[in-house]
Amino acid sequence: MMLWKTAGRCAVCAAALLLASFPLLAQKEHAAPPAAKAGAAAGKSETAGKPAAAPATTAPAEGPAPQPQSPQAAVGEFQPVLHAQGAKIATCMDTIVAESASVIDAPHTAISSWTTAAPNDNVFVSIVGLNYANKATPNGAAILFAAPLGSGKCEGGTVQIYPFGQSCSALQASLIKEGHTIATLRALPVVETKNGYRDVLIPTAGGGCVLVSVGMRQ
Image (cartoon, rainbow, N blue to C red; front, side, top):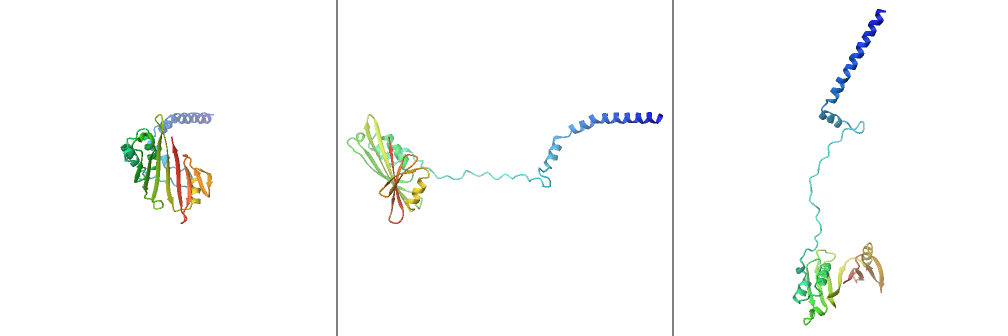
């Protein structure tokens, strides 16, 4: 009987010691520094048996990729505009400026015509020659015209001419990716672009193609 009582007391004492140790263990776990936990987590791999991945290296910052330069010429640098200013044209000046900006995208030279007696009441025409760094199309030409309609209004148009070394069929296939063929004029395809220009493709004797692009501006 004494043996059972002694064993019972020992069991009670052991249970009391175990319960008393729980807060201490919890306190030790809670007091673990965050750095130690972070280090332990960093040593683990997401996939068993695989070493932890090495930290990614940061590539040196690079500047933006070079972009082709667009014409940044001021309005007064377009020769047709200079000619119109010299002719004292006012009614169609905005049209001439807009047309020049739309067709002149390279070093150029222009010759212009107007009626000196009444420049604001008659048509203005300019023929422009352009030079490109592109060996496939080193030269081009543009014609722009503007005519007053009365009441301070003006209407104009442009014609751009570019000779290409590639065939007209290859050029047409490229153009209809964003446009569509609207006519064939005696074997000359006409492609209308998404911007409203109409491109006529004229085959050359050497297997190339001349693109004639016509646009209207109101």
